[in-house]
Length: 449
Image 1 (tube, rainbow, N blue to C red):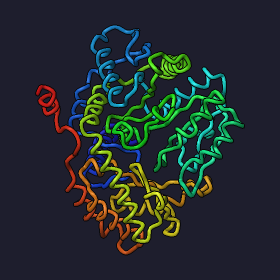
Image 2 (spheres, helix red, strand yellow; image 1 turned 180 degrees about the horizontal axis):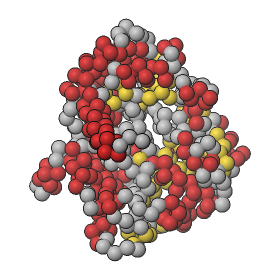
Image 3 (spheres, rainbow, N blue to C red; image 1 turned 45 degrees about the vertical axis):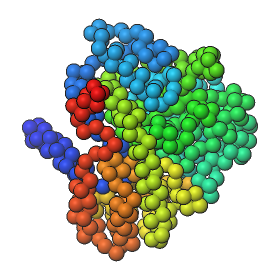
Image 4 (cartoon, helix red, strand yellow; image 1 turned 180 degrees about the vertical axis):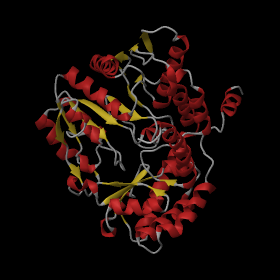
């Protein structure tokens, strides 16, 4: 091993280099990576003592603290309660748990809790190749950790969506305890309303994984999963929702003025899966920043979401017009923050993503719905997300210019190295974060008006 002092020095220099490289010199199109405002970052950085503390215990059926088992938590309890209240306001729900550390852990506790309360270990989900997250699959935590039997719904490749009629037959035949919607490659709203009734027929709970689209949902610009019949929604707080890294689960437990017994029992089972089954330290240092991100979504979320979706649609159209096969043309390419692009004829997703990385354009390879899951090392597709560049201020013409750079690399008209400086210049031109506060001072001045 190298001398420890040299390793520590190299560690610090690598951390500094990363900040310069990814935040100032690259154009980020990873669909699962969000962007915090300067004010949210400032508040996250101020939580120095808070980020050292534990606050394990039980929560109530409003998502607020019921009991904590350590001392010294008088302010931490207030912080968690205030954050939960702000998140309930922006998400339009009456129960939430903000303690999961990620969207994947939120799925874990939902699957654990709901399978236990339903006494049914079957879960119906979209196939992994069609966009479901790995945590939904038999090869991921649902199958390997929660020990669920996974039943695939029917996915219509032409429509790029779950087929409601054929999937209804699957649900009736399999009689699962959970039906899960949402995913990782997620361009179009899933047929929640169409299949909720069928799920209820067989006694299944409906879960909606909103990890990718939580910010769009909060802004009223994608779909309303709770309003369409989902029992519980899981999510990440750091993709289209522009907060610190974390997860959550939420629901409306009150139906027509009364607490729904089935949902209430399920919420308690999910809370038990959070603590004590899977979480001790809930990393409370992120909570104030999450609450502030909720305020920003309340104030700016609609404009941000609309521009994000518009940018994604413009990119799909422009790439398509320039000879690149973008999926979903008949439906306008996307209704979310991301598009799926078939680049098999250009060497495949891995090759294209690596070429673009050399030009400082960052995106990821991705399986497409029509291909074999065994192609995951070099799938046919790439996934391209626009939430980061939109928050930096990109509008339609800026997206078209960016797409022209991408096309020039994919078609080998230009080498990655020949456009790298152009990409860095573009990245630095959009250095200021939009649709949010620039400092905590600005936040306090706004709130004290």
